[in-house]
Length: 330
Image (cartoon, rainbow, N blue to C red; front, side, top):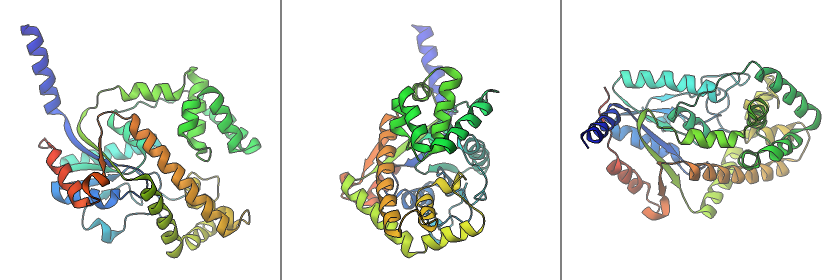
């Protein structure tokens, strides 16, 4: 009995030694940015973006990038740090985010991860190990050649045959992640969806509070459509024209993002602007649905349904603050 007590006490001590981390996530257009900034000001925090597009310079409108005015003096990290022709992936995110974390802790502040890329959040929270296999580069090049020859839909069907769970979670347009999933299967003979599930069972090295903001699905879809209309009114087409003039093309990771590939197709004469906007709204709604599916699989999260708070975001903020026990940064 004494051994059990000591073991439990040691476990409690280890938990107390963990460094604090707050996560605010949810589907696109739900309103994560505003809440994360208000929370940061309330707890003395700094924000690390977990967004795969806001990391790029010159890509402001299509990524719904937080503005200097919206930041309201709160330090933000991983915003405007790469050029559009540079690659950004989960490994780069891990490296950049961990470096930002060290600086935030050194300043005695509380880090807040804000963004909707659940895979990035999982990788940081549970220190997922992405080891590079020497065979990986060759397999990747073969798959890249295959997508050039037969297209993204064909590659997505290849994934569906070996790992239907991953195929359901990854859009066919997200060629980078489709290739990664197939590459993992070719290297290990295992589904990356099963691997991700195993990673979710790991214990985190952080003392974290993980909030998922959500709202009624029909209202969310209305907000998505309104956001797309606002992007167009604010100059999305002109932004993509400038990127194209800079030499950016569909083969770049940055230009595969929602809002960019659709408008690029319009500018390349592959569809009308009306068709591009329809596809963008449709695919953004599908993306939001996949985000929600991802977060439902995550453990130790607290769902903050806006309808439960009468749609009052201030009440959501107060509930988060009340539910948090943020340990002092060592």
